[in-house]
Length: 186
Image (cartoon, rainbow, N blue to C red):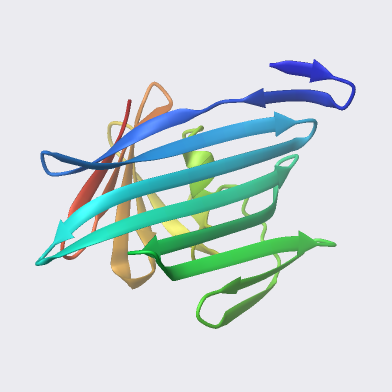
């Protein structure tokens, strides 16, 4: 922790290994930084997957910035084999969210949900019914299952399951049509 004239800064990094079956295919680094009343979440991942006959190299970067308990801004990018596949960005000004999801969805309006996927890496979403997903800039339904498991339903019926033990995220299960991944805390 650093203490200086501009306030207190505190970083909380964590690492997850990405598994496809029994094969380690990548890693995910998450970080939460506090500075005064601002909190910045950063997530970066890199994975190399063999899907059908092709190798897919996927890298992602996502950020979410809070002022107090309110989401102020977020952004995400996904690169596939070096080319941008998806991106999004949102910034709040005077209480109104303005954003863009590639390739052409413009968002204007409020965002009252203080829960994002980035926040889920650091806090168990007890009592939450939806999560604001940074990559799609919208709320997605969250269902609590037994044993500290939460099921997040993304657009196109994509599902992620978050597994918590004693309030700490241990695994994220990414269930997709052609492959399933598990992000496991190291």
